[in-house]
Length: 315
Image (tube, rainbow, N blue to C red; front, top):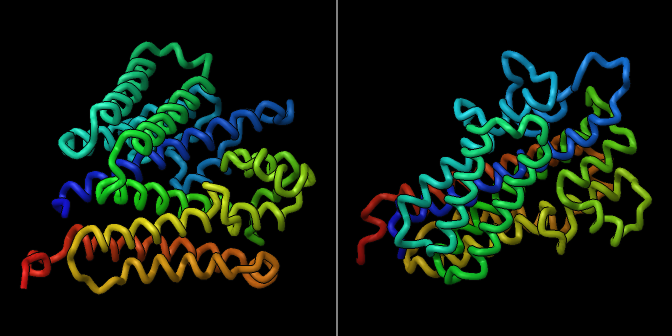
């Protein structure tokens, strides 16, 4: 059984890296979509991006790609910036060097150093997409190295739980932004394309439904597809699987609340119908998914990380 501090660090390594990759990917797509903005516009409008990332707009809203990258990639004062998340993940990894392998550490450290170097040199201002893709590819490489070189035991399961719990909540929040009845930005065709691209889902969607974009099919794919790795349903299944594995590998009894909550979320998505979700109240449904993710996080923490020491002692 892992020490609780080790479990905590592994869980947050993957959550922080998933958050960094999500932020970088949404920025990359938003910068692309902004290239065909109207010539009469006074500048770039990044309001939808901040809403999608669930972060408060800055005191001074960025008005160009350089200012955006500076704020959401390199600003260490912003806890959800890409560099802040990678720095936090690296610090957690440094604390559990005995649990992760050298390949994992070298990849994460290399990503941290490349971002730091780009920030110091300042040459990125003419290549904002390069910085976004540097972060995205670095996180993908870490995930691939982890799955290929780390033993798929208890520590690996904590990494999976953190990654997919973060992903489920982020995808649900992103879809919610596009299906709110009171949306300030009614989506057009390019925005639906942007939503799919923000989830790396455009090509997968086209293979499943052809290139005809329908909002209900976009919602169905991102929420209920069982095979696409960024859908909420797929992520919920992986969270449930990881927590059940942790429960077995920990060799310790607990109330099983985290696994039950994860199972309920997974079941609701397994049996969900997109027409019912959209016809009733999509915001309420997606908000409930977000609350489930928060409850699973709290229950997992209580069961495996902040539990009373007495529960871990043999009877």
